[in-house]
Image (cartoon, rainbow, N blue to C red; front, top):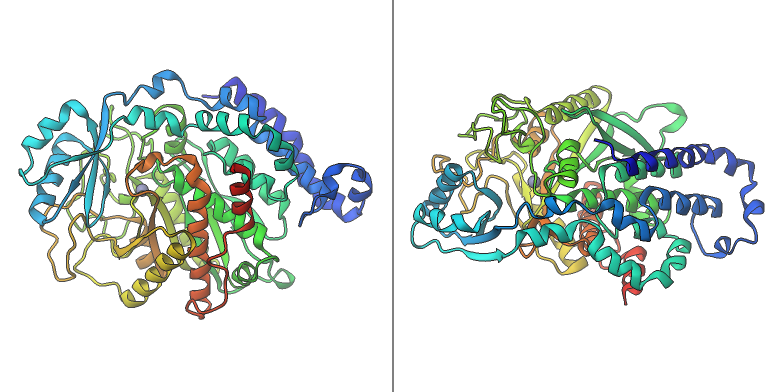
Length: 537
Ligand SMILES: [Zn+2]
């Protein structure tokens, strides 16, 4: 469904983008400085041409709207906000396999929405009237504590206007400064979560701003026919010759629709890498050695659905054999060891991965695209699949703890380094473990016979690791640790983005053979982050 407001925005953005695409020609002609002399904006320090900045700021307003008009366009309907009015999120501290097994069976029986499972806890969303029914299925040792008492209110708060109104109202005086700041684009874009349409326009804008190193592609189409967009970022090859093999890092977000912080973090990485190129040695070095492909919204149908209808939608929107239960869990849809363990066969389950491998359109499209890339000289050296929440860095295999990945020591070593880079940048602890672990730690010799909270067959990291030999494949579950869960407020966007950025720098350094010893500014928050903090004071 296309609202009149979005249609208008599309019509407005087209000419701006058209100008943006012609920019290199204008810049090459050298006329932009003379043309914009006298404009105060020209005087502000910037690493890009003043004309480019003016264009960018104008486009930002068109893409994201002027502050006063945004609340009206992005706030969901009251009906959407009241959907979860009787729901709570509760936490169980699970200490043994029997408890986990009981919880897993109850979750299956009651179609519970499991929000997180870590070696320490399992979080579940449910109607508060169902809590007592759930407890009758569990051992007495499992007692819940309430994490989020009012899910509806938390849902409402994540959509852009409530917090934004306050911020924009109180910082209207800063608006001019924001527009003249070299990082104005970043600041505005990362103040709030963004719609799919805004992200797509913004990616086009980035491609236009960085034509020599950024290339926007569609890796395929979703079930509902939306393009799954990616930006490939890398140095142009010499004299048109392809770099063979092109070592590539793939970074994805939004595989699960409701995990908005994963999408915003991919965007943050993308933007940071582009704007740090030629400014920060590690970024320049990274792009000198690797292409990085960023896919912020792997599940565009699900993501769009979280904006239009149901903020907590996780799966795709593909029709299943059950008319009233749509959607496949894309992280149980990939073809490696898809059927290795008992998996969800009920389409109404939140972790239903289909009736056969790659039945989910988006998983299939990503795999086809990636495989095709490898046949054209691309070698995936690393795959970072960003998710939320629980602050964990998970390495293969997800499907079993009985099989060790061949380079487990290195996988673990690098994961610990990534966690350390994050901790040094923000103080946030991230747990490192194998993705096979459920709510209770298993050993590699343990059997998979006990029911787990979520079976791990068919995951994306396993497929990339095993089928494409992406030797450093990780699923990173971002902030938080349960205070807001999937509904982490928008003021976490930049700090979380910074955390992963530091992890990415560490990853690049490690892959380049320096194993984390190269001088790189892990502890230094980037300029845009400092700038935003200043503005909020
Ligand atoms: Zn996820």
